[in-house]
Figure (spheres, helix red, strand yellow):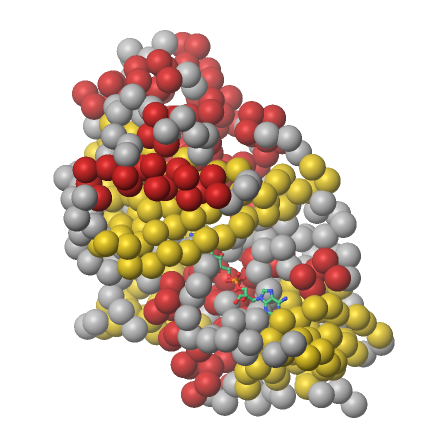
Length: 441
Ligand SMILES: Cc1cc2nc3c(=O)[nH]c(=O)nc-3n(C[C@H](O)[C@H](O)[C@H](O)COP(=O)(O)OP(=O)(O)OC[C@H]3O[C@@H](n4cnc5c(N)ncnc54)[C@H](O)[C@@H]3O)c2cc1C
């Protein structure tokens, strides 16, 4: 006998979706999360959403229904509702160390849409509860242990420890999964280090550029500190943005960069009248993905098994599939093997490991060029702006799209074109030699 048939550890987008689907199937399941409120997002998650284009071998068709949006997962075969409209983003900007500006625009179809992670989480939680899902919030899962046909977890609620048991465990506890560490499931993964992120959501930002994402590079923008900063339009106001830093540890680097940027840097005047409406942070441990994301009766779902991030849209899809295949496993089928095949077939960085590198190339772009080279390229881009009708600019393809644009310009010298081709071809090991040292997990 076990307390539950299934326990879901971690109720982010993956875990909440799994709980909702398990409840719909009438499976005796419990969702556990350390957060006291499961209808709130507290971790930085900037709001990029890639719809109406193939992404992770799924195409999510967006249907606007008044003030709401319906997402049709056309490959995985399910539909969810999001209780707010989406905003398409048609412009993308980069700013060099010396203030040079680069812009790409698309006219008919947006590069991507933006959403509010808080809305997404509260919608999924509400649906799960409406379908009868059971939750245990405010509870930290400390460790997991397996014996044949059974998983035992130690949990702590209000300072008191106890154990709970289940037949199958879905570990959707995100990056740096504690469940994975407790059963040593990360031993074959390569660790490329941990980065710190800090995000302020700000309204009334007085930015005159076309509404779009903005990448800022270079020490001058950050008072001599190393790092990068992105501004992403936020759905919470016409002039609202999420301002997000990326830096090495300690996490206080992020605070220093962000505070300098909005109070003293060359663009501080944009923020004179702005208000901070939300603050969040996150540590991101970059590990190669799990290829077979289960060990015995424990299935790793969403970011717990991923390279960097599944994003909300794909973590949700992983949660849906996890419920479907856990049901099969409970009924004596090879559900976890089937989930593994689906995982390997859909997530780009498993099918083709070079995609791990492609995912970060835009952020690391300035590391491959000198300040003078970037200025030269950005000056050229000012004369030859990138304007396309439609772009499928997923995070995997964006850097290559930019480079191909420059490589087509006769003014760009051959040695720079060669460098761009090298960056396009670089795998994660090559990128890591440029950005830092590789460590073993
Ligand atoms: C800086 C940053 C920017 C991002 N930008 C975007 C973006 O633009 N668009 C996008 O879609 N996604 C973005 N993401 C990624 C997105 O947040 C993740 O891919 C997504 O949240 C993964 O969902 P998940 O359910 O797998 O894990 P998570 O969302 O991490 O959920 C894990 C859950 O497990 C709980 N938990 C963890 N450990 C325990 C434990 N031991 N006991 C109990 N509970 C536990 C946590 O409280 C959490 O609720 C971003 C992430 C970061 C850090």
